[in-house]
Amino acid sequence: MQGNHDARLKKISASGSVVLSDGQPDTKNLVIQVRNEGDHTDTIGVYVDVVPPGGPSNPYGCTPATRVVNTVVVLTAGSQGTLTATLTFSCANVGGASGQTYTIMAAADAHADNAGACGPGQIQSVTCGSALASDDSDPTDNRVTTTGFRVK
Image (tube, rainbow, N blue to C red):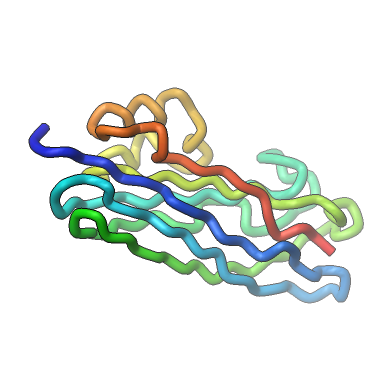
């Protein structure tokens, strides 16, 4: 490993709510900020999963319920990139999901070489965390989890 490699998942910005009570899907943007805190230009993998209300078993039949971003960005030292994903939300059982939120998990991967270890549904796993840490000078800021998109 040469130089200082440091991919940072800086921020996840998600709307506070989605309105599904009218029986129509709702479309919202999800914004991810990633930063190269290393000392040279680096390739960074960005992985984002959305977990629906009720968890991975998805008892309310909500979408999205999967990986929504799986991309690579090239950032110069100290620069930041912003990715936007437009998502369409719906639930088969809106009443059951009402008042609950989606969970958004994201990871920044220096060298974009850990997509296998950080596959869909695995961002918070020990395997993913270890893989991210193996070639990142500061692995404490590779992953962020937040909630958003409360079902109304």
